[in-house]
Length: 90
Image (spheres, one colour):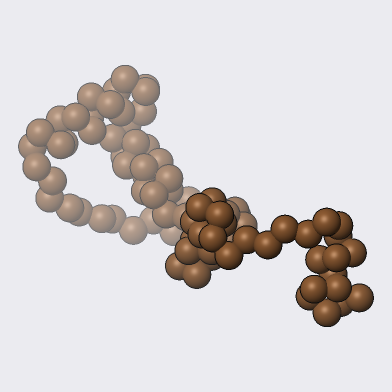
């Protein structure tokens, strides 16, 4: 931590007490505990990359998956070559 900035916030007494007890349990100061929790809550660049890889499917993709599970709009092909012919790729 190079540049330090003082941050003052008001928190409910019960939350403050729980934070102090949790910090003490983990052998931390409340300052260390709060900083650790803020760091956990704010995604870092690597977390963004991981999140980008695990994106949720959009509505059309979900709908298509649900239809295929129900057997709707599903075509069967005798071979991969037949599939390619149907797609106009062969």
